[in-house]
Length: 187
Image (tube, rainbow, N blue to C red):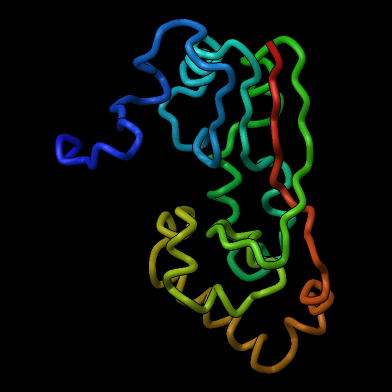
């Protein structure tokens, strides 16, 4: 309950991206991290971010055109197909934000602790853990029996060394450039 939030913590604010409870140009900058694909109305949310922000609007998201090129697509194609369909295109975000917009590929470090699929690019065993899979919402949109078959197939190829013969070099890479993008819109 928000009324019981300890006073030393930052005040919690109830709101949604599409209707932010702040006045125009209230913040120096704003950021949305792994969230735009979950908004009900992308245009309304980005317009609101721009409205309440004096300076840069920064968005960390994935490029749907690149999501399915990740090796996991060979094992869990429906998971990545659903993931790709959920993310808005880079072009649509850029058009809505208008003005100068820079889109940059973001390298993912080997020891990335976030729970998105590409965070485990060189640690495929993580996908055998239910908690790691559930950290990425796309897995929850696939029937459990299908997800289980994907995990079984990956497990088999990890056990027999086939995964390593195909993708093992990823275990040695300090970073991976996949679909992760940083979008910065200057005012």
